[in-house]
Image 1 (cartoon, rainbow, N blue to C red):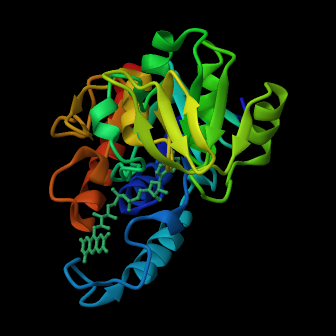
Image 2 (cartoon, rainbow, N blue to C red; image 1 turned 180 degrees about the vertical axis):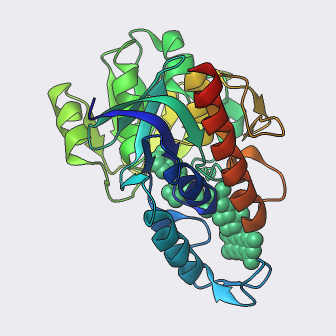
Length: 296
Ligand SMILES: Cc1cc2nc3c(=O)[nH]c(=O)nc-3n(C[C@H](O)[C@H](O)[C@H](O)COP(=O)(O)OP(=O)(O)OC[C@H]3O[C@@H](n4cnc5c(N)ncnc54)[C@H](O)[C@@H]3O)c2cc1C
């Protein structure tokens, strides 16, 4: 029971915090998982277009919003969601190894931040290069694959790939390794090496056959790009949510095509502004409360 919730909100920016205010004032048990200090607006940028605050830094705005949301009954956990699954109730797994179950989900994880990390990435998309282990792992059964990334998302993708091949390793592309102890333990247990190697180029015609690193050429069948946090796209694929380009598709009530799953803020597209994120968070929360009242 302890890990069972009515609503779990994933995210920590204006959309998630706004949703937390609404659900935190209801009778339902709710949990927000995310890091407010990692919101896109958390910094010294001056915001002058959010009603009621003629001039405020993003940092101050989030600190105030976080304090406001904490006044009510939503519980808060600073952790990273690495996987969501199920058709309702939904399972939520975090980087620190915690598992939760929730009747409804609000996804408010912001913009997918993935930058191109390896030259020629586009040329090899679908030809040995992927960014979704659950979608494409099957094509690499018993093949040699490298996951590129330095955080929990990379670790989670590497572990997912073990369902298809034992030949998996992680290259952080020169960055410091920032993987939680729980996941590092799992990687170690399954003999998945984590190295700081930087990939400078890709090779193969038309399929990817080699990566070039500072140590020279290395044969590979598959390269999985898993930089940053598990993004909205990964969550959408895990839950079979419809996408509109890179954004989660929602209706005017912030409902997705899957019953019980709602999405809010930048991850749904639109004007990518705080005002929209706050409004969406409220809408998604009210829709989730109605879902619980009417359907569960
Ligand atoms: C430089 C800059 C200046 C801006 N200036 C303005 C401005 O003046 N006015 C304005 O209205 N807008 C401005 N914006 C836009 C504004 O920042 C966004 O529209 C707003 O932050 C969107 O809120 P959000 O909650 O949807 O996403 P975000 O604020 O990006 O929050 C997403 C949250 O989800 C968390 N998250 C992501 N993945 C996971 C995961 N796997 N597990 C747990 N948590 C996760 C992130 O850590 C983050 O806390 C600016 C943006 C930038 C970059």
